[in-house]
Figure 1 (cartoon, rainbow, N blue to C red):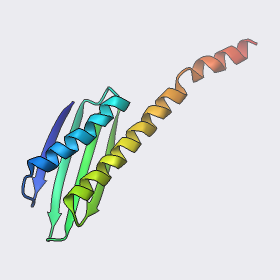
Figure 2 (figure 1 turned 180 degrees about the vertical axis):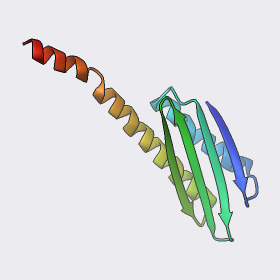
Figure 3 (figure 1 turned 90 degrees about the vertical axis):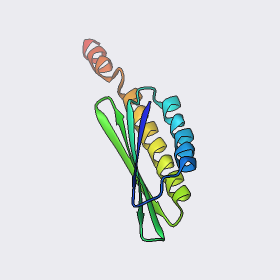
Length: 109
């Protein structure tokens, strides 16, 4: 899994990158086909911090963002949203497997 970080109007922080990397490792446990993740950290003024991420999966991109007064809270919320969306995507894929075959079997009977 390749993760690229972009810092806009914010001071680069290794601790935030490490925290996010640990959280995003959970994505690979849920869905092993994550190829690339791009994360953008932005600061607007002194009180607003935004974390945005795009996860590239085969055939789809999943986006999430979160804004908070604390960058750590924004990163945590954004990572939670990404994990939830990837889990939902995986559930959709798994629930659709075999649907075409069921239809064919029903026509034969």
